[in-house]
Amino acid sequence: MTRARSALVPVIALGFSLAMLAADRLSAGGPYTDDLSKCLVASTTQDDRALLVQWIFSMAALHPAVKSMAHLSDADRDELNRRVAGMMQGLLTSSCVAETKKALKYEGTSTIEASFTVLGQVAGRELFADPSVAGGLSGLTKHFDEKKLKSLLQDDK
View 1 (cartoon, one colour):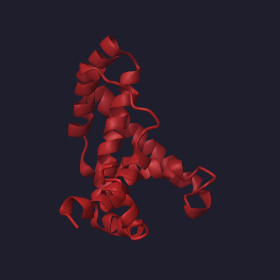
View 2 (cartoon, helix red, strand yellow):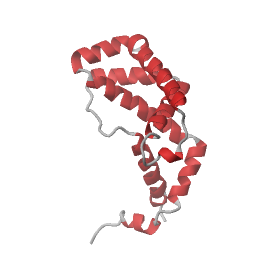
View 3 (cartoon, helix red, strand yellow):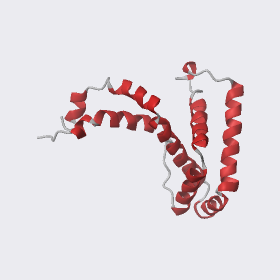
View 4 (cartoon, one colour):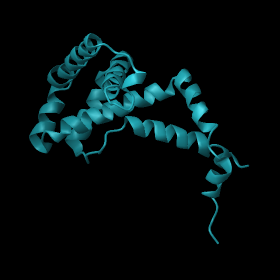
């Protein structure tokens, strides 16, 4: 088995997991959206990005398909909303104010969603890079049929 083929299963698992954190649609950003996105990422700490992941989780936990698996009180969710709103407002009106103004002026309000999507993706990558989470992902990979996945790399003749 080649090295590339043996790495296929964990790559699929990681790709699937990261896709779960991505937005339902990605906006094509222009140069001002790119600048705002870069500023948001550069202006946040690892703790800020962890807070964003907690908030995303708390919102996703409201969905009926997973609601019984997560136990967050309304007070906890409200506190996360308060903290994330403060972080976002500070980023837009202080840390990245110049980039925000230019992005809004030249590319419109969709730049805010697109830029925070990038920040959420960076936070998600950090989440899945954690050794505990990566270890948990191995539980997924053991259930793949490696033979079937390897067949995808075969040329059809």
